Image: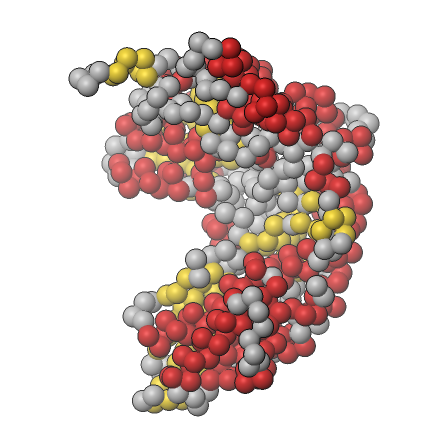
Length: 415
Length: 148
């Protein structure tokens, strides 16, 4: 399992990078901002903000359309960013890298364009109990359209997939298996490479929701072997509104377009339209060019940071966070898997998570409270909601200490 | 903004020991309210006698603001009429959503403690859940009410 490899002991100084994120110098309620809601969205480094501004100030034009200079520059920016994404996830070809609005749209694309034509009544889609709503609802829509059914891999009290359950639930009717790389509500890192191997051994196609993985660890889609890998820019320090669907070229080639419009066509006649080649076939309409530029800049930035060193640092910080939380009176951790990344959910006896969120916000601390778009996880743990602190490499032990101090006040306020 | 302005003593007290937190077995109206944003859920029970609310109670789970608001509501409306309930709904709606403080805070009694919620826009729905549920129970045919 990739996450089980011992992490290299590389010196990593978060303070060296923290200053690159202008918003981290903000004050909230008169206190320095402590941003611990990175699983919802990450903050953006100056390099990304500047790249987007530079694009609008110097290169802005529509892509793949004009013969004028600006259109050529914008197209070069847009396609240059695609090549950066390809290298970032180690895809074989840039034709396998489709721009989307985000993870959600990427999953919907696969559900509608790949799964829907394939599925027959009684066919099975295998997913897990820890999925984000965006990796549940698109599949539910497809079951309604085709008569296929969802099968759910249950999770343990620790928040891990029940041992052996994934393999057991792969049946002769399973057509596609879809699962998160890292759980947004629990932080669990799933053994996606092994799961992919098991699925492929039975001829089952695999989609991995990588939204919570890409900010925390290097991802190599060829090594994982999955057929589709979806992720968002905004959780990996890029702007909102841009995301990626990676798909194996052979599968993407065979899939019909999902949305129609400009850009995705070659010849349009009223009696017949010829579609464009990959990846443009799936990119109808004027895309989020500035978002793509920002995503490319985020990838360049992450190359400087060194994700491997950052991963080791975050791993230690997450352990510190979990340990410190258990020392707070009445706090219980939710999500205690052996392999985790970036996220710690928790509850406090006698204090609803929503109140916790408001109380720590007064100290300038941003955490997420609620169901984290993972209601089946909440149901599994019989909780209406949890509080969740989630990390990025710019977080420090001081951030964790500030949260722990603020949580201590909750009892005072509500006692 | 001081947290004590939101979590006033009355609210802390009603959160810790909610009043009328029980089921009414022979209720005339039972309605569920749900705030999907935070997972707050409550079930409201009403026992009516013509125009009079003979008894009302609630059960469920929620944050301090939502529990206290429901507790205060049940305490206040027991024995009052449907039309009193409608008036109070409107007053509470103004209290929670209007930018300026209503002139007649005094008539709200203990419910005026919820005035601080207005300064926390993300929490307004917590306080208003039980009121929307009440309105649904008195006027609607829906089986549940959602604040979304």
